Amino acid sequence: MEVEHSDNKSKAHDSAEVLLSECQRRALSEVGKSGQVSSVVAKDTISELVACVESNVAKELEKASEEITFQARIRTKMADLLENYTCADDELNSTEPHEERIWVSNGVQRKVQVLHDRPSSKIHLIQDFITEEECQAMEETAAPILHKATVADGKGGSKLSESRKAMQAGIKVPWDKEAEGNGIATVSRKVYTYVNHVLGLDIHEDGQEDLMSIQYTGRGDDDEEPDRYMPHCDGDCTGQQFKPGNRMATVVIYCTVPTRGGATNFRNSGLHIVPKKGSATFFSYIDPETMKMDSGFTEHSGCPVIEGEKKIVTQWVRLGVDKANPWDSFNTLGIKYSDAAKE
Image 1 (cartoon, rainbow, N blue to C red):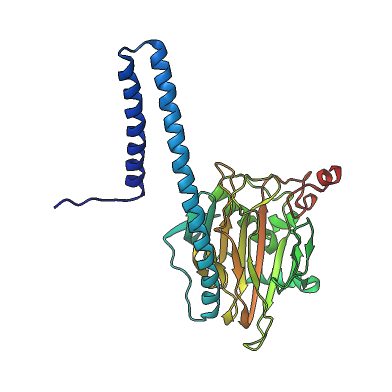
Image 2: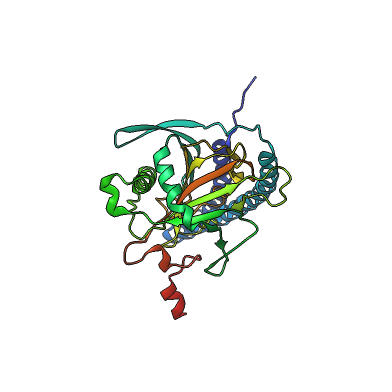
């Protein structure tokens, strides 16, 4: 009895062998017809061999592209069902990590659960990221300036939307007080330190967006319009080349967690994260080597908050901003206002 092992690599190898064998057969046939191999015949044979390989490779790539598109459509449809199911299940636990690591920063060890790890999309859950005192500093600063949350309007600005029901407040980081141990500056520094730890892009705080305090309130099962955030991407998630000045990573920090609801879903990655007080979810949507953006795996949502409150702090991290080119010199399409005015 013979046992044949088959996986993606072996299938690709077999397919390549078939492709090359056919082209090789054609080339040898041409050489045989000539009876002798002159430089002209050799050159023509090589050209035909190359053309044969290019043609067959193009056909294989077209088939592969069609298959990928088909599977992506299935994945998206299944993700819609997953979103509805996971948000409705109060007893559902967080997705199990496929790897656990330890992150050491300033002498403090923190456990990191790796939930998703691809070149252009990474999702990590960091334990004990923020202290009670740091959360208190955030809440006190945000309280007098809370307002209804907005979303990008697709035209470079922002608007109120039914897809996002919450209150929010932008918090400027007092970097001049970092040396004094200011809680807000301390949290923000941890964000950039972790992003650099994972991506190695040497991100600095200059020109970055403010920290954002976001608060959701549960009003019971009968609430027809609960506080939530529908599926969305924080930056580009269509697999395009990165545009300087845009977002490429996010850190969501949980200060207060609801008694029911409020989980974070990454439906295209099949991930469900039940918020834990003091923890943080990091996700990046750029390949730091190729600078290609994620193709949808970091699309995420906030399930409806049914009971209790959910208070989070979010930092959207950009690449290509500095003091001379701060985040607010770009519109929500990632285009500098000065450049847009010239067009």
